[in-house]
Image (cartoon, rainbow, N blue to C red; front, side, top):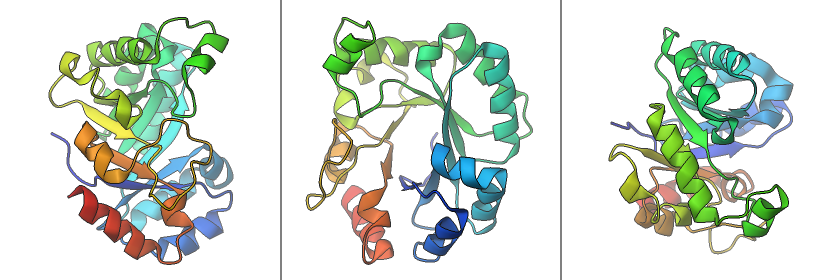
Length: 231
């Protein structure tokens, strides 16, 4: 059973100092933090450990996608950092998903492991560009079923994608949804976007929100308002 938080703030910072400074503006009792490639490349494991020392749960969003042995080792090392959640690309295939799960299970920690289906920056045209000729919903369902078969805990997908796939997946499956935007925000680089309240209604378990919070004049208040909407 998933334990809180329902909200993770996407730390799209290129500088660990900026990440640390911003952390003073939000409450670890309200939200967790998503550390992606940009911040991890600049700050490494040290920034993850620092954030955790301040009480934040960390979702390590590195989307591992490589040969099975490499992914297994990476997932083991990431788990040993004590992160709350980590992910792999579901398009890596069954052997890679199985190896990722083995890596997490061999750790002394017990993070959630989820699979990225199709990036929320993509649409059907983008799928066609890489040789996938069926619909977005069909591709996401196929990948989600593979993730479930290999005993991962859930997926990353657009909130609008959940309705068509949820009946085929375990009841305790986790749906992590980026592409969350407030009414006053521009779409930016996301194509499959949705409001916080509509995402929860659609079946989202965890919302990942970046710029609406990190560029807010009052990040803590914005986070609080989102939490009220989804509670």
